[in-house]
Length: 505
Image 1: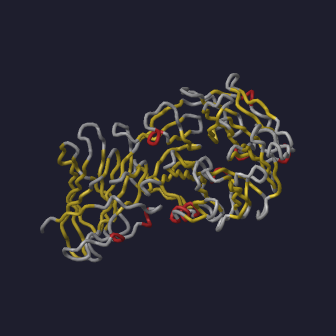
Image 2: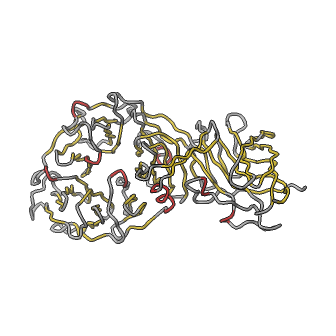
Image 3: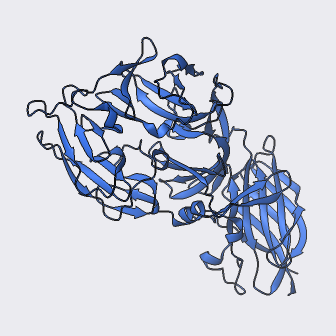
């Protein structure tokens, strides 16, 4: 029987959230004709894999910060970027009891600030109770209904500041926009003087003022800033406060079309400095600006709102599927890093995986790493965009995603299901790969061999030919369809399978 060849498509923009959603595909519908794109083999599963313009690459992780002295039984929960009183970029982090830690420039270790943490620290602490607004290069840190602080870079402590003109017992949070520090309660907002960010005493001279927000549906939960002003998230809708430039009425408020309100700060990429923000609202994953909210990545929303979790075990080489209880839901947190990567952390009881949407390439990747938070880490890197995607673990250790070709990586990508036609078996003979270093790159290639099209057994390929940046793995297995499993280090731009036709079903 004559040998045939098929090149797997690697430029698709998405992949199924669960491998069981990968449909049966056709290598060819008839002799001499290629299968339509929707029926072509693609990615059924992946982790520790990021997209490129030409295919998909495995990635690794590089350690940049060591573990912190976290009290027994506690874990890191959140990392924020602030600027101290001398306008230095500093990272603040909280553990699950609200104890505070800072990471200073060029440092590789967290500085515990346990004795300077506000009185809100204790069991039941939520990082949602802390909001930050940065005005004129200095960050104001507000603990909800408690007190406001700035970071003293000389003493490495939080110094309390008074927000004059406000009843601090009713202030839920702060945000900053257009030179104003803006405080909000359940029903109203107040903006500061542009001369002194802590001065909220209403005045026609300083421009400080405020009032109730018309159009809110329920109570105000939190507010964030964008390039046009602020976005106020309530129980059921979002109100945009657009900057007017009028010192007497600096913000004009209107409801954002198609908005459904917010849930908590973990579910909004609030640190993005653009007109659009990303949020996992009560309507699912949305892109939102001052005019309209639009649904994005509906397959991700459906997956995260569902109750089936999947992982691939690299030792047993099997899928591990967990069905959640009817009232349970997956953990979720989203961040927007380097104005490019939308990171959607998820897991069962903690964050173990992250979907990463590359907004430049409009393609998805997935990482498998246990973490408490994701943040934009900027220190002494030469290429910020590719070296700032950082994950902090429960113990405070920080790793950044390493995209370099020299990175030690262990990615998994499963391509399938390769099927010639609905009623014809094929015999897989070989898989050809490019950009695999013959000396240092460890890679295994297996085939999920299925006789009925759904259930499979595993057959391992044998590396038969190695040259510079080229490998071929040999097989001789006959089945209705095959799914190719690559585990290790790879830079996939070409995956070509070699096969012959076998008997009819």
